[in-house]
Image (tube, rainbow, N blue to C red; front, side, top):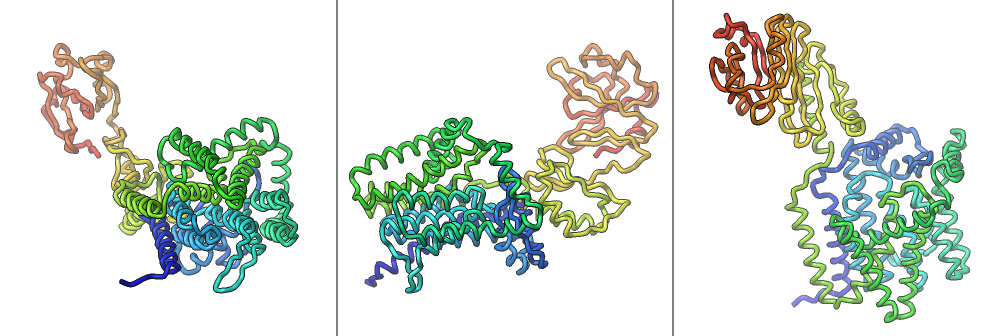
Length: 578
């Protein structure tokens, strides 16, 4: 039997975990979004490809402040290589791969928990959906890991090695501090928090503080250069924030602290249980904290220092956000995740034997992947798969000369991705064509030419100025302009029906218009009508005569004709139903 060295076994397991984590993020990549956050990165990266350097990153929070532009420069090579809007897919996957590899390397400092920490990152239902979005927070876990784990290494007096070369802890802290502000507004916390910890632990190595300080300043440098050229826009936003115009202050500190603590507990429980009820997630978070406190008495002094650092990291971030009374969405707290990964991995590692960990790891992976593969995933909005299909259909309609204009029947925010893709086409539309409506969300029964899951295209036939139209969600009646279409509502004996009356001038009397019930007793009032009843998409024309009111049901069109012409279909032939 072939014996595989333990070091190689360990490397194979780490590679498999990263590979599965990447697969979970790439699965059904057509459902990646292409909206505001993604487009501001792509359009800024396009400027960089064209030679226009960008110094200001995405806007963050309610303040007039902006993060660093690094995400634009990460996206630019993908656009240069021709990935077009699929950059919104491949950049998050690339950063996820980079985060997974870096995390596998950084966690060598805690080899006992290494596999579990990496698995928590790879399989977490809390993190995976966020990693499937192209936005600057893609860098958050990477930035926080490069700050948190080097501090763990200091506590364990561990020296990182790469290809046989020593990598100074100062360099890792520099990179983490630099990436913090590039990742998100919340990343500003990383360098000051690390400095506070070093002071509390009485580390006297000035190079550690210098690395954090220089990394922090280097991250701010592009923004400072932008401010110098643009009347200090970002600085004024920061001053506005500090003056309380955006809600910063100590008022309501304890309320916001309670909220911050709740989100921290949600993160502790949500790493494994996101998608379940909030109550279950919070209970799981409380259980993790209580278990950690119980285990704390039984662990060594060295391990206690690592737990102290982890809770300092989580609580410090919660307290910092409590000083800011503006909105702090859950993803702001992703800077806590490396510490949360360590705590969860330590608890599981302490409670379970090596064999139990392997069995649970294999079962959890198998169940999670199986569930994901066979789950009924549908895009929640106009994501890349939908948008590509819509654009392809529009291409065909425009080529056929069918389209005179394109109308977005949706919210402005939902239309951004499609507008971007269609602007690239520069269509020559046909003035004699029909208006093309892009419908989102599409509801079954609405008028549509082509349906794409939750969206649709519809060529509007109402283009003849010499025609009269009555429009409803699932049909349109077109008549000559000299005929009037009158819409009214009648009630059956049992339930209400929408009925539509086609009327010549002067034919429908005031008395007839006020009939409120269609019954066997008053049906004679309609003996001169011809009914058009819709049945499975087909229209059936029925002469009423002395029939009962059973014909009066929802979805029916009533055509009013003079008595002398009741048997004729002349008027019906002049009427078009779409």
